[in-house]
Image (cartoon, rainbow, N blue to C red; front, side):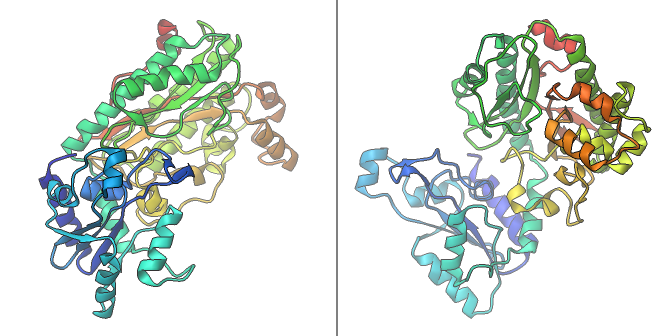
Amino acid sequence: MFSKETYTERRRRLAEKVGGGLILLLGNDESGRNFEDAPYPYRQDSTFLYYFGLPYAGLNAVIDADSGESILFGDELSIDHIVWMGTQPTLHEKAHNVGVEHVMTSDSLRGVLDAARKAGRTIHTLPEYRSEHTLKLWRLLDLKPGDHKASVDLIRAIVDQRNHKSDEEIEEIERACNVTADMHIEAIRCVRPGMYEYEVMAALERVAAANNCTLSFNTICTINGQTLHNPYHGNLIKPGDMVLVDAGAETQMGYAGDMTSTIPADRRFTPRQKAVYDVQVAAHQAAVEMLRPGVPFIDVHNRAAEVVAQGMRELGMLSCSAQDAVESGAYALFFQTGLGHLMGLDDHDMENLGEVWVGYDGKPKSTQFGRKSLRLARPLEPGMVHTIEPGVYFIPELIDLWKKEGRFADQIVYSEVEKWRDWGGVRNEEDFIITDTGARRLGKKIPLTTDEVEAMR
């Protein structure tokens, strides 16, 4: 944890920004994997972590935005808990460690909220992303399904605060990024024909564990890079394949790294692999060059899309200009995702609060295919941490659908696209912080260009 002063100041600023009422922050509970005493690995709610720093299950909290006081709600562990879990800090000790003076039992929370409601006070709540939160809110606030409306004032106050990383946060994120880089370097070194994807995954995840880190998300390790979030790891790696690895480490404090590498199974990229891989790298580098305060991230995305479109034009797959392909959306046959997302206590920071507030500052998102998947569009500000991860993906089902529908038939040369339908996908990803004058990559450098990757093979 950070110092108690850090959490006290965060809560003070939040109360001041919200201005009045009670702020209800729900912690996460344990969740049984197949029965109660065999839970999934525990992870505290990130917003609760940000303001209270306590990685323990069974806690909830209220911040009084009028008085500035905070109350931690929970229960002391029984002897049965201690027998199985060992000695734990008491509830009062947990509260003291993060600068909270008032502690109440879990059953007391309902009474505190009832009293506030009777007094006509506003109770600010966040969107639910777990069913347990939904059930808690129904019970605590006498809600029926569909009644809950999250507080936009609270969401916007939290987003504004968490978007700007402090020096101590940056140090922790950089640690996560350094371990993440080591995970990818291990993967680049070890990939060989004849291995299974799960063997590569095991090698890189061992690096996280050896550095006292968990994973910031489920590892993607696949020879089918065109499947954007591929959960399967059972394929045999063959000569001529490429392995896309998207993986990140999470520190004990919950801060994340998130990087992607695309690795040839052989010691060298084939000319056919290199032709598209180099387009992706050019898009990546063009995006990085634009990073500075005040630049709307949507403009950075469009620049990367333009470079991808130009590369596809030079390979004969587009007949229009790169600018026209980006404007029409034809580029999204090859680049279906967004360029990047915010990062911090989550690998996709605060997305449970709503992308329209986190990445768009309340402005509406595009509904255009490809652009609608862009999670960040707002102008960049100092202290923001985000990823850069353009990709080029040949998805046979998407090619078949667009071709059948005649979509962008005057811009896409489908006869040429068909020659690449089995190519797969490529993505490389790095993490950046926006500084006062530009941007800085976080973590050790991992190989990006074909020359850099081959040098490590």
